[in-house]
Image (tube, rainbow, N blue to C red; front, side, top):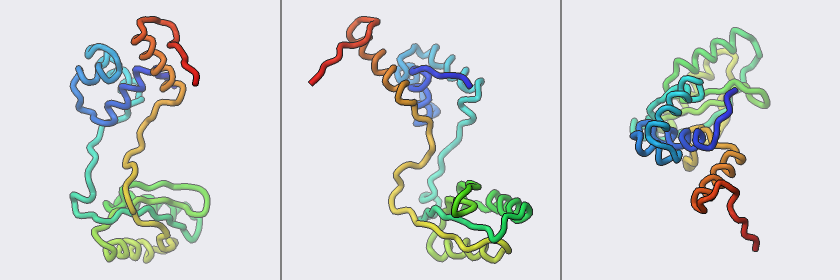
Length: 180
């Protein structure tokens, strides 16, 4: 596992917001020259820290007014049933993400539907298959966060602030601490 520094963390934050930022903006975001920022970005890709870049598609713009997170329980923990259900998840475009989990349910799925009838039709489609109990879950009330993103650890954030404050004060030492 490769450790990242504060500049890498700021660079990752910037490209997760917009993977097409020009070099000048990338450099400004991480406090480096544009060339240095691009070199770091290339290394983050080569090291596998950035796995891929993808477009985020708006379900609402495609007519999917409902998003729901549902829990699915299989009647039995049979390898054939599990494998078939995993394949069905991959082949169903209305399922935007799926997780095989432990606990009260076997899977957690994020689904989209055009309306409640569409959601119930999807539920019935899976319910007709042997071994799958009906979906349990909740509908989206308001989207709070739409993409799992890397967030720098607390130590990286503090180190970044210390470095920025040191630059402002014209020193390589820690900034002055003011107490109340």
